[in-house]
Amino acid sequence: MIEVISKETGNKEMVINMGPQHPSTHGVLRLELVLDGEIITKVRPHIGYLHRCFEKYAEQMDDYAKVIPYTDRMDYVSAINQEHGYVIALERMLELEVPERVEYIRVIMAELQRIASHLLGIGAFGLDLGAFSPFLYLFTEREKILDIFEKVTGARLLYNYFAVAGLMRDVHPEFKTDTAEFVKTFRPKIKELNDLLSYNKIFIQRTANIGVLPEKVAFNYAASGPVLRGSGVKWDLRKNDPYSIYDRFEFDIPVGTGEVGTLGDCWDRYMVRVKEMEQSLRIIEQALDGMPDEGDVMAAIPKRIRAKEGEIYVRTESPRGELGYYIVSDKSASPFRVKARAPSFVHLSLLPAISRGSLIADMVAIVGSIDIVLGEVDR
Amino acid sequence: MKTPEEIFEYLKNEFGEDALTFEKGDIGDPWILVDAASIKSVSKFLRDDPGMRFNTLMCLSGLHYPKEEELGVVYNLHSTELNQTITLKVRVPIDEPAVPSVEAIWKTADWHEREAYDMVGVTFEGHPNHKRILLPDDWEGHPLRKDYVPQEFYRGVTTRA
Image 1 (cartoon, rainbow over the protein chains, first blue to last red):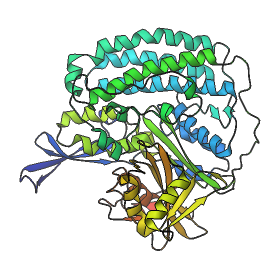
Image 2: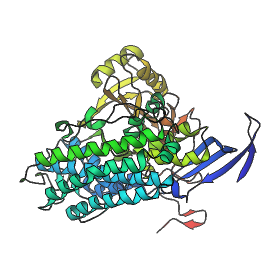
Image 3: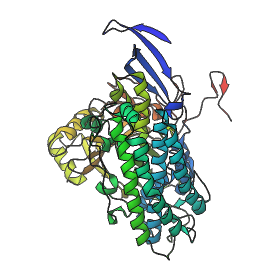
Image 4: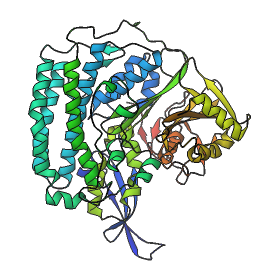
């Protein structure tokens, strides 16, 4: 703890550390807070504690496909979405055709993962604010999704399931019924969540009018995903820049409305995630209907991928926002450069802009509402 | 919505032919190679011009080209208003890797530029907080350079596994 005299106000200010070991920083994030009493005057996030050299590893692999397991480990809460982004980038780069059945399975898996990720994000957010029981209810549901994933891929967290122009293996025969069963049982739980947490008076008081992110600031900081939509912007890459087969499905883009406070506050960002789970269920239902029962799960492609010279930037909608892969090829067997544009990294950089002037206890709500995963921030 | 070729023509009328080159690989997206000295004015024009309106900087990456002994910075821009995309690229010699910062134009560039400095060693002129971001401040070298050799010890602790 250091005390300094503020040049602007002349008040005595205190510098304290929140993290790197702190339950509400969702991993190893260190926030250097400058406080005037209980008011935050400055926030300096310090990151890098979880840096595992993803980009360097990617360059040193002797095959483009060998990077896929590493993408899992960036955002370990939504590994499928990370793989999805990477394989789509490669497929666009190499102009590969993906079998119909594969596309449907991918979309179902990606949307299930989105729900699982939001369940964790929402649950941990409530936990940060003192709501313990919703976390347990939500984790029960998340467990059901992980069970489906375990049956399909053999793993519960890091799957290595998507391959270039295909899947590692076909889904099990009961995949459709398992997923349909989950959709049926999960839908009423969203209402339960709204009763238990969303419209809880204490929860609203902790989140409404806190950490307001205006639309203009959001664009300036390149916010995306639920953080941008929470500020009332109808922007979803699944609709605005469709990839895979998302253009075949009907779903809405939920946006923040300022229902209980100001547009773009913590509650709006939270509520967008809740409503998004409902839309993901709609997509899963349609995909289950359209999914062909028979078909290859691997396109006929050469065993070793060789790309021509060139570069591409491909972005997909991960649960946290715009996940971009910038890949440069120099004709060799390994990528010349892979840069992952992680939504959490970008969102964390706007933290100082939205938390200035708030109370130190609200910092917990703001960090929780932008839903960061440090594995993705540090890569 | 304009194609990258049209955007290039549009920019050429404004900034002349010397500062800009249109390039394309055998596959993937084309890009506009911009003179390092004009990147800031080009960026500002791209953001503010009514025909461009590039309000978001999606991604900024640093690159090392060992053969040419150059460093590069790549800007992936998108306009949500006009739904158009363009890639800009700047290349600077490795012994003088200074690029003007675009932090004042798109705030999101702040951390991206710090990462590019950290990883490949491009220095951004005019950046308000030009420090390493992922690695500790006293780390030696820039890991994403192709000829990078990790330091043997960091504060007396071996870096070997």
